[in-house]
Length: 371
Image 1 (cartoon, rainbow, N blue to C red):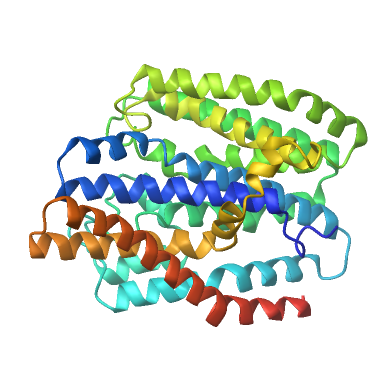
Image 2 (image 1 turned 90 degrees about the horizontal axis):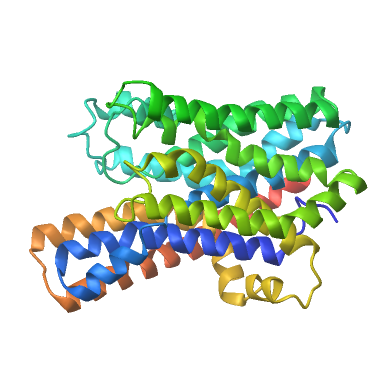
């Protein structure tokens, strides 16, 4: 099976869960601006861990990309083919969205300390996560693009590492980097007296978040060996259970803030989430087809959302930002506006994702056959 040509339903299911909880993290909390009632607070409370969807995407990307790289290693045009296929998949939606938002006059620079041109350079060069890591405000519309920058930076460096290192060295590099990222987060949050960056640099910088991508990569590397794969499959259920306990404990440290201002979550909690996702990937790829978990993640709703997850991720926050501005201007309040806000943000994001896939992404992706 060629991993870059055939979709795996269970992994699409993980994508579906990830994008669903990310959208729930961004949309219902802002809907509370227009309907301050127990129902709104309930939706707000259950959406507070939705940011974890980004970590799920990271681990999944690390696994899939490394699988592709290992499969193509040694083949002609290794670098050209890999990067061109990534360009065809990622750039059209990304740069079209940037251009519309920046040159359409949507981007809010009031809390960023810059202008559209200087800020645009960060985004067009896929370096915006470092802008956020420095403590600069993210503004409306593009606050979620930090994760796309981290993935793109990973795509630039990791193919070189895979190309020049054998499996043993790759495992060492990945393992040391995973531990190093965790230790760096611990240092920045608990030992470095810099309150101005304690909630930004550890969360947004590539060096402190690369461990999630590399945990996925280590799984792909381990699967290259029958012995290591057997051990990974054996340990996955235990790691899944332990990592869930770690994440739960980090939430309990500060239930009202399960991420920012929660040092436990920002350190071992992020590692726990990455390990949990990695273990889940192993379980879904190796258990019997009739396994309940595999059947759940193959559900058509989840695989449908997973198929369009990239465009949904790109579009949902600009759409939500537009709704927020419009609702504030109109002064809408109450249950019906609140409900329409949530339904509108979800449905319009999905419609745009479907249009994007069928009118732009799918035709462009057909060019992959040349690479």
